[in-house]
Length: 113
Image (tube, rainbow, N blue to C red; front, side, top):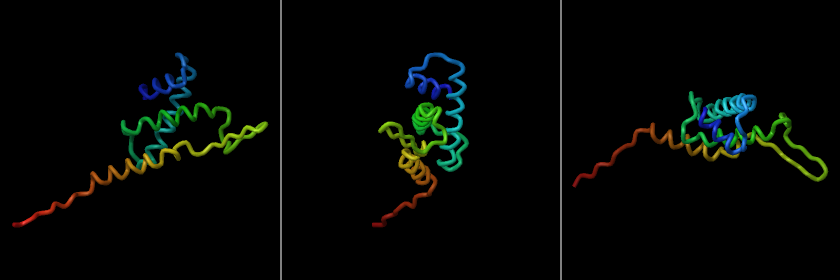
């Protein structure tokens, strides 16, 4: 988690702040659990999918104060929020298909001459 936290802080340009660290760690933990469920109830996020946790944590941090909103509008400005993991659905599906293909035994073909 510390590598993900460090990357999130660099992306958000956050200096050392213990109060924010705890909040970011909470976001990382929840995002990781959600991703693990979508990946087939894994016990931890695979390294190859950690970027999703980083991106979703940044988005979640930027939504602070707007929890529970689906959309927001004010003076001609409109913001809509979707599920954080939805935009990564293709990546999640690709990962799952790759893992499934590893577990399915392949049948060999034998040619007799």
